[in-house]
Every structure is written in structure tokens, then in C-alpha cells.
Length: 436
Image (cartoon, rainbow, N blue to C red; front, top):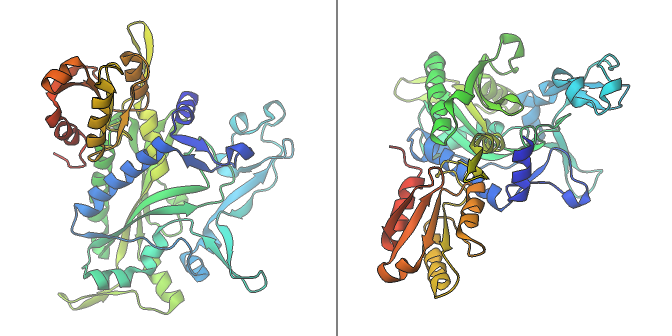
């Protein structure tokens, strides 16, 4: 894990937030390559689950909501973790995750025997709306993105003329005041979610749940994760959230152990019923074909953007020996890789640099590219391997004569020769979001 964290900082994937001031625990900044990686994840998810389906529409709701939303949803009363204090090291920990061998900075003197009694700690982050403290309204930064979908349910299906079964998708930031952020970006206080609330009849809950299990599993394979590093975890009844009758998680085998990538929950009619009760507005659905009014059940696939990015980075990281030298290569799927192609002149002289720069500007209109002319060509290949660029395009003296270039594949290191006019189509075909 240390190698991945080091690479992320060194090559511009992920930085500690506010680092020049000592950093802020549980908050991270995504650098030039990191933001491209995250955008590619979100774009592919949206392409797969929204654009390619006729039964799902999108939403981009406000982060700030009326405080009564969180009372109705159960977050004010139920969104708690148990907090314990260690009387030896004076640190605070989440009780269900506490491991003195890993967590305590004073390991020889902290064995977990000197802990305070557990007490409830609400993880929502409070904020104030208003011009002055005495008149401000207190609300919360949303701890999940789904509540706005439930609140806007009627507006969405009325305006878009959707009919049950259908889903509403949203990608957005959420905030949780984690007691003990850990494992790099895996558990943080500010993160992004990709969520769908899929509305169906109660009698269709189970087949709908199984269909979503298949679809979201396939998506992780399609973006390049190794199937043997994925598994389903079925939550026992005693660990289910207050709104769920069934929850299963897709977990990934991280260097620090198995961790959740995406939860799939059967929320039943809980949320729409609660918001109907607390708001006084009817959020039931009328089926004109059957002349039936009912409150839909909800199946919820909820994925973490940051955790997906971390899984991809961990899975892609490889160290190899090539011609006696260590080669670090990030084997990211081409559709997810931040940079699709690097354009490299064999040498800077004899007009090759200018020719390569012009070619890079043309390709840049099609997909993200990078131009590099500094150092030996082999060293430049290694730099692009380290950030996961799937294709390197070399312009040499033959290019000036016949308008062909050499394209090197990152994973196999095999090279092919193509006319310059065919390069864009060749790379786009490898990087497209389209599935076979």
C-alpha cells in the first residue's frame, strides 16, 4: 500500500488536503491525473447505467437540504457509531473497528483494556444557514446522496413521464464525520457516491435485487478489476441499517484486506413512507394501466467513486523486471486510464519535435494526450507506463517520409506501425465506453 500512496503523490493522482498546513485527516485532493481517473469512472458509470438504459434518469440535487429531511430519514436518531476513548493513549476510536495493534500510536502500553464505555456519536456534519448566529438555521451536509432522490421522487417521475419500475441516478459529494479515517482514501470524511434508487412493486423486490447484483458485478469487470479479487458479502440481520431488509456488498481485496466497494440494499418502502409522513405530501405512485395506487419499494445500488478509484489503482499496480531494470506499470483499462496516448518524437531535432507537437494537438481533440520530448525514448516509455497510459506513439525519421508512426502497447510492449490518419480511430476503438 505504501508504494501506491507514494506513486499517487509523486505522479499527481492524489494529495493530502491542506498539506502545507500540516494536512487535514480524512480529506484528500485529486491531482491532474486523479481527477481524470475519477471523471472516467463517473462517465463510464453514467454511460452504463443511465445513458444506455431507458428506465433510468438522472438528478443533480443540492448538497444542502431542509433539516427535517434528516429527521424523517432517521439520520438524526439512527446515524450513529459507537465511540470509545483509550485512557492510555488519549485517542478516540470507533468501537467496531478498534484494533490496538494497528490503531494505537502507543502500542506497547495500549492493549484495549483501558477503554471508556461506548457512547453514541452522530456522524453528520452540522452547518448553519443564515446571516447571523442568532437567526441561523442549523442543518447538515448530506451524509448520503439518496435522500434528495426520495424527496424529488414525484417531481422526477411527473416531469419525465417515467413509469414504475424505473430508477433515478445521482453522482455527488457526501460528508461523514468519521471517528477514525483510515486506509488512504478508503474511509474519508468527504467522498463521492454513485447511487441509483430503483423503484418497483413490492412483489418484484427479490428478482429486481438479483438483476442488479448481476449488472453491477459486470460493471466492475468491464472497467478492469480482477474478478478473483471481488466477492459478495451478505450482511447478517443484526448488522442491517434501520431502513434495510437485505443488504449485500461487493468487496475488493485491497492490500489492507477486504473492503466494501458498493452496497446493494433493499430499502423497501421505508424512505417514501417516512417522507410522506413527515412532509405531509403524498409520495405514492398511481399506475394508470392497473388503476392502482401504491408506495414503491426501492432497490439501491450505492457505489463509492473514491473507493472504486483506489481499487483500480491497487489492482493496476505492477512491478516487473525488464532488461535488468525495475518497471512500474499501472495496467489501467484503456477506458479508465487518465491519459489515452503519449506522443513522443524519437529525437528533438530535424523537425520531428514540431511534427509530433502538431500531431499531438490533433489527437487532443479526440481524447486526453500527453507530449514528452525529454530524455531517451525508453525512459519516456517508463514514465508513461507508471501513470497507466495505454499507448505511446513514436514519430521517427520514417514518419517524415511515409506519414506512419509506431504505436507501443503498454501491457505487452509490442509495437505496430500505422498511418497517422488511422491512429485516432485505432485508439478510440480501444478506449470507448461502448461494450461488445
